[in-house]
Amino acid sequence: MTAHELLIQLRTLNVRISVEQGRLRVVEPAPKTLSDRMWNELQLQKEELRRVLQNATKTRRRTPIPHMQRQQDIPLSFAQQRLWFLAQLEGVSEAYHVPQGLRLRGELDRNALKRALDRIVWRHEALRTTFHSVNGQPVQRVHASGNGFALQEHDLSVSA
Image 1 (spheres, helix red, strand yellow):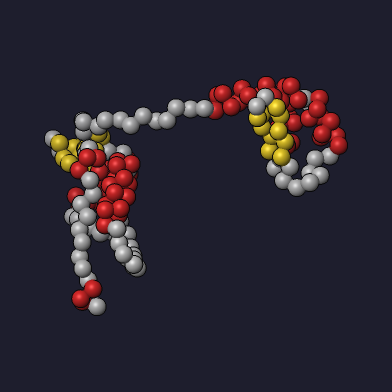
Image 2 (tube, one colour):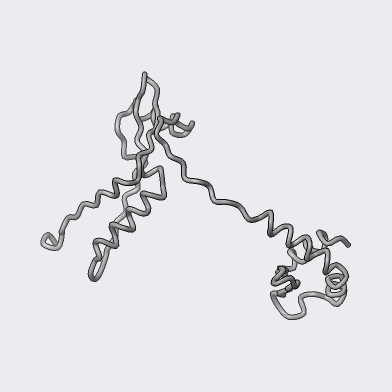
């Protein structure tokens, strides 16, 4: 049995195997998950398993996707083109709006709420994107995240 075949069998048994500080570490989901034959195979393949796992760990490390600056207009995706077309036919629609109510109890830290919403808008370009027509063609513009979230407050405590 090859090291790869052994790894596949261990995975099907939900046995976790890793290399920690140069040593092979095996964690069974329950005692006696592995048979004596499997333990013997682990011993025979120990060096090869260590090499395979160390190589897999090296190739698995990836760099994060860089944040792109979007100064230019971007063409719409096919799904966005469909929505744009429907909006041109029917006018503004609330068909895709999903309203959600939220009841908060206790003191509200307005600054923490604003920072949290600003962070969400900063992370998700879709929340900073507007659609425009340029020479009759729809384009999307992703705006800078520096504007922040326009939090509007309405005190409804007197209307209850």
